[in-house]
Image (tube, rainbow, N blue to C red; front, side):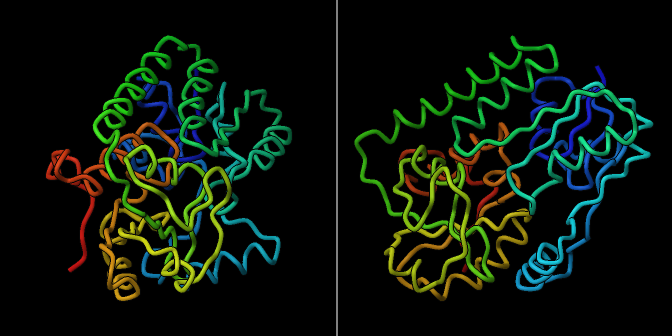
Length: 295
């Protein structure tokens, strides 16, 4: 089976299911594993936002959407040349990836008969279910079941370790200018890690807020997890956020590696957050290798 992934989290799922040799197409943002983008055909492109501030990126996105434009470009000719059997896409967020409707229209135009599976989880449990969806569509349901069991076992170990312990109040900043609260599965990560998410919208879209509203939620810990950034970018932005919260610990996390991409590494994120919230229980050095407390 020839697979094409149109979002980074789906690429991670494909490799976690040991299907990397069947993956023929990816997006320009697929960087896990690091070899994916170099070894596969890139079929989706987008604007290079490196060098832009969060405020500039926000203005660009709002402007494109207001004008009815797209944030991503499907390279239809490249896609057709791959002759895919299965395409993995999403309808969850126009800011995060190409909507499935664009893919279906392109396939109709090209006369391509590939199956299209849209992965649209809103909770941590639904993220795990998408692994089963990919496994079933790719013909490896047993591998998917084994992976899900292993991930649930890790979550159960964290749950057992934090059971009965005080739960710190945790605010998550998914974007810093303007600030956005945590939504979708991100509050679930905090709960699974033994914290109490505040100023968050579990199972719903992330929404714009103000720092005054976040401060009013009285968090003990603030996690800065800017969508689209790894640890270096998160650290830089966390330093801007920290002055707003003089009475809370402010941590930067590798957002793309641990928090915002709905794939298997979200369990790594739970373990990292648990080490922040309960450092006397978990091996903080090991679990927090991709987080940072700004000075």
